[in-house]
Length: 170
Ligand code: OFO
Image (cartoon, rainbow, N blue to C red):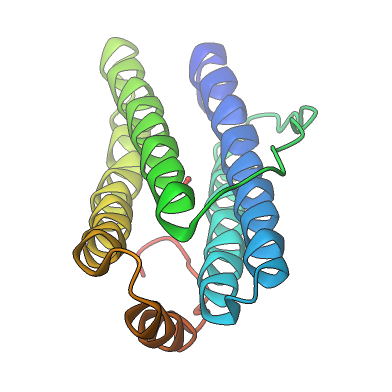
């Protein structure tokens, strides 16, 4: 069974993951509005992955005989700028989520909860991957500046991203 402190911090993390999904969906709608279908696809796929992240925590709490308590999800902003501005926002957001996951890991150490410490390692690796993926897009956007042809090709590339269900250990 998990302690109350661990249960609370995992429930807070569920909320952050679902908020992430909302934020990515808002960005996806923005990209659709400005005609960048590939960017819209990328952020939409990411939103689905965020739901998976939330559900993995949800299932873990239940498996450890804890209580899931779902909190209100904050409204994401809707005013976004250029593709670069959006991706810079994504990077900041993912850094915030990384810090939050690190706090969960610290708490498992404080509570001597080795099972949750082992579980949360999956999220630690996932955050490394997410920050790297976003950084890759930012670098490309910076490299090509305002070049329309390059943006067109990047949009095509991001349009190829496919959703693959995330589950613990995959
Ligand atoms: Fe769930 O990793 Fe992004 O926010």
